[in-house]
Length: 69
Image (cartoon, rainbow, N blue to C red):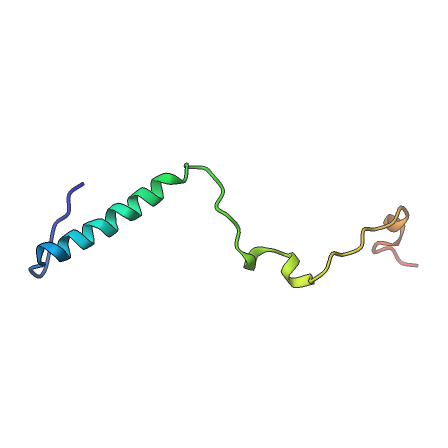
């Protein structure tokens, strides 16, 4: 890994802190295997909108769906 300072003159402590952050981010990114699903957050959970479970349709529910009476 090569890091190049483009502007400024960081102290050794500042450079070490920046390098620690970059290494921590790289380690966190390598912990999750590629192709693995990311955990879903609460915003994408459909149950937060309904607040309760919807009733399951009965055995004759198919005959009452979108057909004119």
